[in-house]
Image: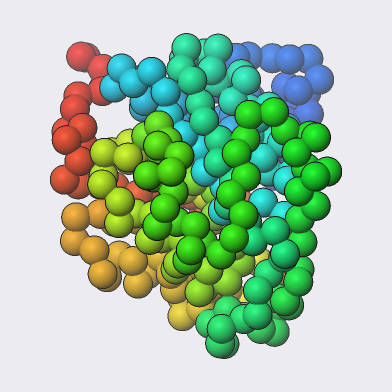
Length: 267
Protein backbone atom coordinates (compact mmCIF):
# COMPACT_ATOMS: atom_id res chain seq x y z
CA UNK A 1 0.00 0.00 0.00
CA UNK A 2 2.77 2.43 0.93
CA UNK A 3 4.56 1.91 -2.41
CA UNK A 4 1.30 2.34 -4.35
CA UNK A 5 0.60 5.63 -2.57
CA UNK A 6 4.13 6.85 -3.32
CA UNK A 7 3.75 6.08 -7.02
CA UNK A 8 0.36 7.77 -7.26
CA UNK A 9 1.64 10.80 -5.35
CA UNK A 10 4.14 11.59 -8.11
CA UNK A 11 1.19 12.88 -10.13
CA UNK A 12 -0.10 16.26 -8.92
CA UNK A 13 -3.81 15.37 -9.27
CA UNK A 14 -3.22 12.09 -7.46
CA UNK A 15 -1.36 13.90 -4.67
CA UNK A 16 -4.45 15.94 -3.80
CA UNK A 17 -6.67 12.87 -3.92
CA UNK A 18 -4.30 10.79 -1.81
CA UNK A 19 -4.00 13.51 0.83
CA UNK A 20 -7.77 13.63 1.13
CA UNK A 21 -8.07 9.84 1.32
CA UNK A 22 -5.40 9.66 4.05
CA UNK A 23 -7.20 12.33 6.09
CA UNK A 24 -10.65 10.88 5.48
CA UNK A 25 -9.75 7.35 6.54
CA UNK A 26 -7.07 8.37 9.06
CA UNK A 27 -4.41 6.23 7.37
CA UNK A 28 -0.93 5.94 8.91
CA UNK A 29 0.83 7.61 11.80
CA UNK A 30 1.54 11.33 12.09
CA UNK A 31 4.89 11.21 10.26
CA UNK A 32 3.24 9.28 7.42
CA UNK A 33 0.58 11.98 7.13
CA UNK A 34 3.25 14.69 7.07
CA UNK A 35 5.08 12.92 4.24
CA UNK A 36 1.93 13.00 2.12
CA UNK A 37 0.86 16.54 3.01
CA UNK A 38 -2.15 15.13 4.82
CA UNK A 39 -2.09 16.64 8.31
CA UNK A 40 -4.35 19.57 7.52
CA UNK A 41 -4.06 23.17 6.33
CA UNK A 42 -0.50 23.85 7.60
CA UNK A 43 1.43 20.72 6.79
CA UNK A 44 4.66 22.73 6.54
CA UNK A 45 4.24 23.76 10.18
CA UNK A 46 3.69 20.14 11.16
CA UNK A 47 6.84 19.10 9.29
CA UNK A 48 9.08 21.64 11.03
CA UNK A 49 7.66 21.06 14.50
CA UNK A 50 7.71 17.27 14.19
CA UNK A 51 11.30 17.04 12.96
CA UNK A 52 12.70 19.64 15.35
CA UNK A 53 11.02 17.79 18.23
CA UNK A 54 12.45 14.54 16.90
CA UNK A 55 15.92 16.09 16.95
CA UNK A 56 15.41 17.44 20.48
CA UNK A 57 14.23 13.99 21.59
CA UNK A 58 17.29 12.36 20.00
CA UNK A 59 19.46 14.73 22.03
CA UNK A 60 17.56 13.84 25.24
CA UNK A 61 16.22 17.36 25.70
CA UNK A 62 13.04 17.58 27.82
CA UNK A 63 11.69 20.67 26.06
CA UNK A 64 12.11 23.00 23.10
CA UNK A 65 10.62 26.22 21.73
CA UNK A 66 8.79 27.19 18.56
CA UNK A 67 8.71 30.80 17.30
CA UNK A 68 6.47 32.54 14.79
CA UNK A 69 7.58 35.92 13.47
CA UNK A 70 4.50 37.73 12.19
CA UNK A 71 1.26 36.43 13.71
CA UNK A 72 -1.43 38.77 12.29
CA UNK A 73 -4.84 37.34 13.29
CA UNK A 74 -3.14 34.34 14.89
CA UNK A 75 -4.11 31.48 12.59
CA UNK A 76 -0.51 30.31 12.64
CA UNK A 77 -0.34 30.24 16.44
CA UNK A 78 -3.62 28.35 16.60
CA UNK A 79 -2.24 25.78 14.15
CA UNK A 80 1.02 25.50 16.10
CA UNK A 81 -0.86 24.77 19.31
CA UNK A 82 -2.89 22.01 17.63
CA UNK A 83 0.22 20.47 16.10
CA UNK A 84 2.23 20.58 19.32
CA UNK A 85 -0.50 18.66 21.15
CA UNK A 86 0.15 15.72 18.82
CA UNK A 87 3.94 16.07 18.71
CA UNK A 88 4.26 16.29 22.51
CA UNK A 89 2.60 12.88 22.87
CA UNK A 90 4.81 11.30 20.20
CA UNK A 91 8.14 12.43 21.66
CA UNK A 92 7.19 13.05 25.30
CA UNK A 93 8.63 16.55 25.11
CA UNK A 94 7.32 19.92 26.30
CA UNK A 95 7.04 22.65 23.67
CA UNK A 96 6.94 26.39 24.34
CA UNK A 97 5.43 28.75 21.75
CA UNK A 98 6.32 32.41 21.19
CA UNK A 99 4.72 34.76 18.68
CA UNK A 100 6.29 38.08 17.66
CA UNK A 101 4.18 40.83 16.08
CA UNK A 102 3.91 44.61 16.06
CA UNK A 103 0.20 44.30 16.85
CA UNK A 104 -0.41 47.23 14.50
CA UNK A 105 0.15 45.49 11.18
CA UNK A 106 3.01 46.15 8.80
CA UNK A 107 5.09 49.26 9.56
CA UNK A 108 6.06 51.75 6.88
CA UNK A 109 8.36 50.12 4.33
CA UNK A 110 12.00 51.15 4.68
CA UNK A 111 12.90 51.11 0.96
CA UNK A 112 12.46 49.15 -2.28
CA UNK A 113 13.85 45.99 -0.66
CA UNK A 114 10.62 45.76 1.38
CA UNK A 115 8.64 45.40 -1.88
CA UNK A 116 6.48 48.50 -1.63
CA UNK A 117 4.66 47.41 -4.81
CA UNK A 118 3.15 44.48 -2.92
CA UNK A 119 2.93 45.38 0.80
CA UNK A 120 1.27 48.36 2.50
CA UNK A 121 1.55 49.87 5.96
CA UNK A 122 -1.16 48.51 8.25
CA UNK A 123 -1.65 45.14 6.54
CA UNK A 124 -2.39 42.23 8.94
CA UNK A 125 -3.25 44.20 12.09
CA UNK A 126 -3.77 41.99 15.14
CA UNK A 127 -6.71 42.01 17.55
CA UNK A 128 -4.82 40.78 20.60
CA UNK A 129 -7.88 40.39 22.84
CA UNK A 130 -9.68 38.23 20.29
CA UNK A 131 -6.57 36.14 19.63
CA UNK A 132 -5.86 35.52 23.31
CA UNK A 133 -9.26 33.86 23.62
CA UNK A 134 -8.29 31.38 20.89
CA UNK A 135 -4.88 30.32 22.20
CA UNK A 136 -3.89 28.69 25.46
CA UNK A 137 -0.11 28.33 25.81
CA UNK A 138 1.37 30.74 23.25
CA UNK A 139 3.09 33.89 24.52
CA UNK A 140 2.55 36.95 22.30
CA UNK A 141 5.39 39.48 22.25
CA UNK A 142 4.24 42.82 20.86
CA UNK A 143 6.47 45.45 19.35
CA UNK A 144 9.07 46.00 16.64
CA UNK A 145 11.43 42.98 16.62
CA UNK A 146 14.32 45.44 16.55
CA UNK A 147 13.31 46.30 20.13
CA UNK A 148 11.81 43.03 21.42
CA UNK A 149 14.47 40.59 20.20
CA UNK A 150 17.43 41.91 22.28
CA UNK A 151 15.54 41.31 25.56
CA UNK A 152 13.77 38.10 24.57
CA UNK A 153 16.21 35.48 25.88
CA UNK A 154 16.85 37.19 29.22
CA UNK A 155 13.18 37.97 29.83
CA UNK A 156 11.53 34.71 28.79
CA UNK A 157 14.38 32.20 29.18
CA UNK A 158 12.95 29.98 26.43
CA UNK A 159 13.77 26.33 26.01
CA UNK A 160 16.16 25.67 23.08
CA UNK A 161 14.58 26.99 19.89
CA UNK A 162 13.95 24.19 17.40
CA UNK A 163 11.96 25.79 14.62
CA UNK A 164 10.94 29.25 13.44
CA UNK A 165 8.20 30.38 11.07
CA UNK A 166 9.09 33.61 9.30
CA UNK A 167 6.24 35.81 8.07
CA UNK A 168 7.33 39.39 8.63
CA UNK A 169 7.05 40.05 4.86
CA UNK A 170 9.65 42.83 4.67
CA UNK A 171 13.37 42.52 4.09
CA UNK A 172 14.04 45.05 6.87
CA UNK A 173 11.88 43.30 9.49
CA UNK A 174 13.22 39.85 8.60
CA UNK A 175 16.79 41.17 8.77
CA UNK A 176 16.08 42.60 12.24
CA UNK A 177 14.51 39.34 13.41
CA UNK A 178 17.72 37.51 12.51
CA UNK A 179 19.37 39.31 15.44
CA UNK A 180 17.96 36.51 17.55
CA UNK A 181 20.68 34.30 16.08
CA UNK A 182 23.31 36.51 17.73
CA UNK A 183 22.34 34.97 21.06
CA UNK A 184 24.35 32.13 22.57
CA UNK A 185 23.99 29.12 20.27
CA UNK A 186 22.93 26.96 23.23
CA UNK A 187 19.60 28.77 23.08
CA UNK A 188 18.95 26.80 19.89
CA UNK A 189 19.07 23.25 18.66
CA UNK A 190 22.20 22.57 16.63
CA UNK A 191 20.04 22.53 13.50
CA UNK A 192 16.95 24.73 13.41
CA UNK A 193 14.05 24.20 10.99
CA UNK A 194 12.88 27.45 9.36
CA UNK A 195 9.91 28.12 7.11
CA UNK A 196 9.86 31.36 5.06
CA UNK A 197 6.42 32.39 3.89
CA UNK A 198 7.45 34.96 1.31
CA UNK A 199 10.13 33.58 -0.98
CA UNK A 200 8.11 32.10 -3.89
CA UNK A 201 4.90 34.02 -4.56
CA UNK A 202 3.32 34.76 -7.95
CA UNK A 203 3.72 37.13 -10.90
CA UNK A 204 2.71 39.97 -8.56
CA UNK A 205 5.40 39.50 -5.90
CA UNK A 206 8.19 38.24 -8.19
CA UNK A 207 10.37 37.50 -5.16
CA UNK A 208 14.07 37.57 -5.99
CA UNK A 209 17.46 37.26 -4.31
CA UNK A 210 17.94 41.04 -4.01
CA UNK A 211 14.80 41.89 -2.02
CA UNK A 212 12.61 40.59 0.80
CA UNK A 213 13.24 37.47 2.84
CA UNK A 214 15.54 36.00 0.20
CA UNK A 215 17.94 38.93 0.50
CA UNK A 216 17.90 38.68 4.31
CA UNK A 217 18.88 35.00 4.06
CA UNK A 218 21.58 35.71 1.47
CA UNK A 219 23.14 38.46 3.60
CA UNK A 220 23.01 36.37 6.75
CA UNK A 221 24.99 33.61 5.10
CA UNK A 222 27.59 36.07 3.82
CA UNK A 223 27.95 37.69 7.24
CA UNK A 224 28.33 34.49 9.29
CA UNK A 225 30.94 31.76 9.08
CA UNK A 226 29.85 29.52 11.95
CA UNK A 227 26.13 29.41 11.13
CA UNK A 228 24.44 29.14 7.77
CA UNK A 229 20.99 28.71 6.24
CA UNK A 230 20.70 25.90 3.71
CA UNK A 231 17.90 24.55 1.55
CA UNK A 232 16.46 21.19 2.62
CA UNK A 233 17.92 19.21 -0.29
CA UNK A 234 16.27 15.97 0.83
CA UNK A 235 12.94 17.70 0.19
CA UNK A 236 13.59 19.64 -3.00
CA UNK A 237 15.08 16.58 -4.72
CA UNK A 238 12.23 14.29 -3.65
CA UNK A 239 10.24 12.66 -6.49
CA UNK A 240 7.11 13.71 -4.59
CA UNK A 241 7.08 17.53 -4.61
CA UNK A 242 5.11 20.14 -2.69
CA UNK A 243 5.69 23.89 -3.07
CA UNK A 244 6.52 24.41 0.60
CA UNK A 245 9.53 22.10 0.24
CA UNK A 246 11.27 25.08 -1.36
CA UNK A 247 10.38 27.33 1.57
CA UNK A 248 12.19 25.28 4.21
CA UNK A 249 15.66 26.39 5.25
CA UNK A 250 17.75 24.58 7.86
CA UNK A 251 19.96 26.83 9.99
CA UNK A 252 23.13 24.96 10.92
CA UNK A 253 25.10 26.05 14.01
CA UNK A 254 28.42 24.45 13.12
CA UNK A 255 30.12 25.32 16.44
CA UNK A 256 27.21 24.11 18.58
CA UNK A 257 28.31 21.54 21.18
CA UNK A 258 25.64 19.13 19.90
CA UNK A 259 26.32 19.61 16.20
CA UNK A 260 28.34 16.40 16.00
CA UNK A 261 26.23 14.41 18.48
CA UNK A 262 25.39 11.08 16.82
CA UNK A 263 21.66 10.71 16.11
CA UNK A 264 21.65 8.31 13.18
CA UNK A 265 21.07 4.57 13.09
CA UNK A 266 23.83 2.24 14.29
CA UNK A 267 23.32 0.34 11.03
